[in-house]
Image (cartoon, rainbow, N blue to C red; front, side, top):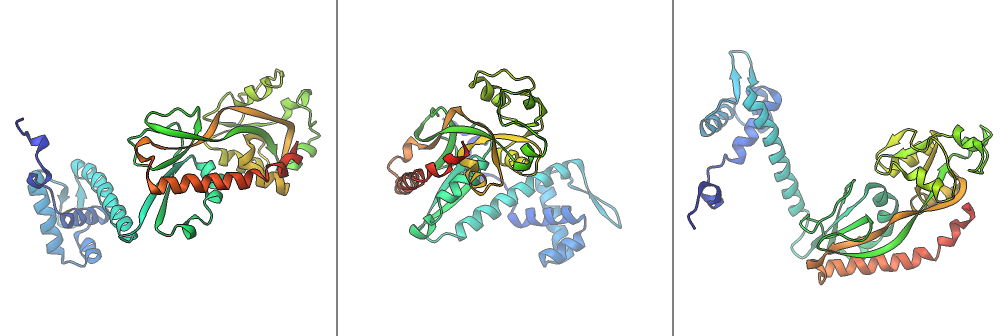
Length: 320
């Protein structure tokens, strides 16, 4: 097959040096060759020469130059933002590589934000001490995802357990409870029976990704309530919980994610009911990594944690 400009090996393409990109980025950030030279520990003429060579290679002006100042051209502004991202990627990749020794491996984990902070991080406590040659790289991702082509070894997801190219192991079902400050109920004389008309006096905190959650909560109980879609809206369970703690209203959140507050009494259940969610929580991994040592290790670790933590599930039954 004939090779074109788009499929030539990298070695045969013309790319600016990282030094030229750094000089340009620094000069663009300061809008000064002098200040850029001080930061880069180079002479002003050296900075100016690097930028000029970059402009010559690109065949486009990146700066407007006057006797007293420089400013970015429209092309320069666009290129600056792109170069900034490139340099950030190089920095992250280099730092990541330098932080790991030759005999270690990285376990890349993705999780929904609230699940990560409230369940996953406690679950992984002690893991690094037990497996010092496996470095955890945990990323929080909101919204629906996952596919095999993403650069992740393990993902903790909520859904139906079906993700293309992925093996999914169910962790547990989701049960949501309505929680609020103790004072939120009693200071305003609210009844703890959802069948009463006092429900319309409550502010129902909404989760953006689950607009019908409150409607389904009451529907499961055979109760018809107006205004279940009305209330302050938040992006994450974490924000809903924080708002409930501050007395904004009542949040509908997974029981497992709010157990510490219920045990401590900083939050209480507004009504004695737990609604079953449409999905469950899963630990998933690409089928291609099924025999990977690091994946087997994390699966075993989570399994043991579940067995241990489930022994304490009855400890929060008092909330009902």
